[in-house]
Image (cartoon, rainbow, N blue to C red; front, side):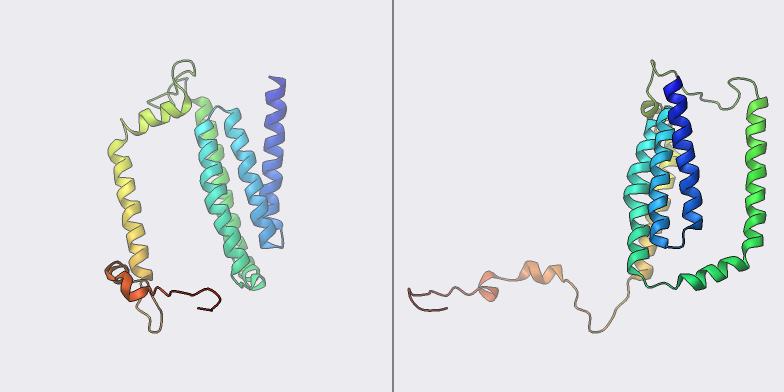
Length: 203
């Protein structure tokens, strides 16, 4: 228990410091690196709470895809971050108000969860670890009770992906594109030439 408590405080402290550095760092590349560190420590907190599936998803999806995408975008695009900071200061008051509202909602949520009796927080409480693992429990609930909602969410993501492809697909002049039909229809004798080279002579 002492080791778990020490690990919790270490992970939580590093996560909070990393989150502050993400916002306050002047270099956007450093901000993304601090964000990756925050994700890793958040995954450690999930492991301590027994949610190993969420920890794995956080590392694989957010660190392996989203954070790396942010890093490549920040490093490859020539963005004037001074203008972005000036625009952000204009909306600082609105951001502060939204932050206070979110903080009050979290306080209200935690307070209501503490008042509710045991077992009344959800219709499907988490089973004990000796009966079913965390990943097994998530899969069981997701593919039984929420199967249709899961399929609807997949269709929504599919429509969003197709819509993004359609919106970005444009015909441009002078751009060479791959034509798979022409590549499959070509014959070897039209593209290859066999040259017999004699010894001592060049091709």
